Image 1 (cartoon, helix red, strand yellow):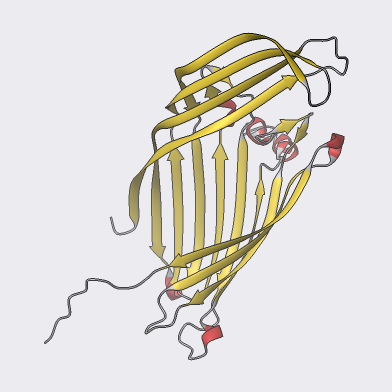
Image 2 (cartoon, rainbow, N blue to C red):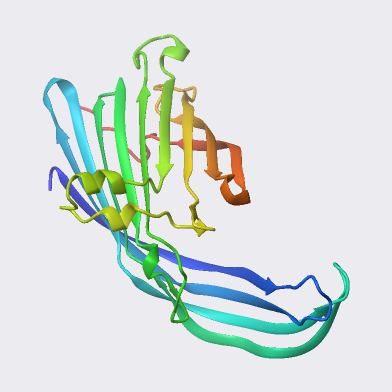
Length: 280
């Protein structure tokens, strides 16, 4: 209707993942083991969404959105090789025998439920403030009937943008300036326990998706960017440039912490095409 929209997205998932695990001993007399697994996915995936838009007083607008992806089984094909070998040197292996070999085994990967929620306030072309949260139930991820051993995750993000004067004749007054930040899988256990566990959400957000040596692998970052208007009358389309400074992981228990910088380019097109002129 006038304020509410609904939609469905259909995606096609395809690609291959390679995974290798091994157990090695420093002594050359012990038998070592290595398992190499190749998994190829090929199937359709669906998700749905709702959006509510409401015009408020003084020209302001409130928008809220909800997305949901149901649990789905994705068809796959798997190759697996299990070897035993002796390690003569750090680079020299003596293969003993093949324990198991699987060739093009068909099966399914069970993708878990995912849900997202977001809202924003805006004042025309002047400014906008938004918030977004996405929950993924990775504890239910199964690969060929075996649980993947992950934890549930939550990613929250917030940002704002500001345009000095959309009607100004000066170019940089038409530029959109953006600033934001995000945090993946925060711990809220202490907060929920202080509420007496009424909402029972402590188990949802206590752990992150990845846990290595009892340490959670969190990710956080800040973002800033510019929306540069392209020349034309009017200035309707933008060249979007954004920069992200992020950190993932921890140095506890001899683990790895990554700090990286990312540059993202985008194009927003708001041209009016195929409009038939009318004359009075």
